[in-house]
Amino acid sequence: MLQKKNWQKKLKRSREESKPLRIKLGLDPTAPDIHIGNAIPIHKLRAFQSLGHTAILIIGDYTATVGDPSGVNKTRPMITYEKVLENARTYLAQAGKILDLEKTEVIYNSEWFKKMTFHDVIQLTAKMTVARMMERDDFTKRYNAGIPISVHEFIYPLMQGYDSIMVKSDVELGGTDQLFSLLVGRDLLRDAGAEPQVALTTPLLEGIDGNKKMSKSLGNYIGVTESPSEMFGKAMSIPDNLMRKYFELATDLNTAEINKLLDIHTHPRAAKAAMAKAMVRRYHNDQDAEAAAAEFDRVFKEHALPDKIPDVEISGSELADGKIWIAKLIVLCSFATTNSEARRLIQQGGVSINNDPINDPTLNIEIKPGMVLKVGKRRFARIVLKK
Image (cartoon, rainbow, N blue to C red; front, side):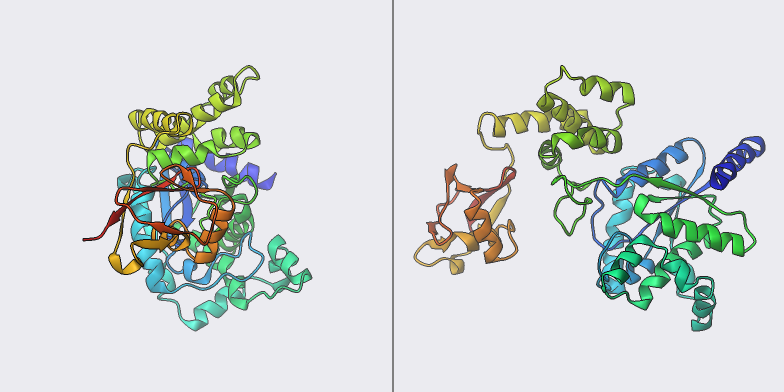
């Protein structure tokens, strides 16, 4: 109730003074790509921006090296600063598919953290008690389960909260798993003598497997920069019971349009195709969405090949008497990272060459230029011999 009153007070003052609110969103570049689950709060930031408020995008080049403990059941591996910067180079371009970057304050939090002394860090940690930190659900679960919690993980929410002080945040956006850190930001602002920020959370989106939160590491994601056909195909694979959630969180359709498409008289496949087209349209355009839908029908209804199949060159040194082990071929085409993973894909019945199923994981395949390897429902490669 207190936060609701604070929110109403901020909105009222913003209108009366014609002064935009400062809306903060932090992104940690722990991977090179943004997926549509990450994009949910970015779209919310864009909505505030469209209403005239100030969008603040914090690239967490320092927080990313610590690792956000939200929603994980073990300590995240720490990544190097060099890797973080490498990932950060792609983040702005991807965020720019959603935000108007010319009107966005883009700030790297190294701007203040790299200037902090160890004394400053001690002063920051003094703002939080261990008891307060253990109120965090994921820490409590790990502690009760005897799973180690590293001390540096306690610093993460304090760093995120300190970002709010430095940018004078009125509202901070984040997923529901970020609520603890957003509330820490409120506390730190109050302690600094500033008006507390409003914490506004957005729902988490399950991955295309329908089980766990969308994640690059789990491979159940749809990337915002993926091709229209890949994006459409992945969207068509989600479970029917997640359609409404994907409609609401991953498309620009309004509630009336969604309700009409999910009407009991609408065939689930037709509704899912409409959802997939709306998703592609959001990140590409109408023409790409229609083309992706047509290609999907051609490949999955008519069992034809896609119009565009990437070439994969195989050198003669990889062959023995003109043949190659099928598992090795799958790895060389980047459809699996290990031979063991490739063998599992074959045993699951998801591998074919020129539409002929491959069921024997020990098979040696004679390489014929132009042959098409298919793994799963959407991954194709045309084999080319390197000259």
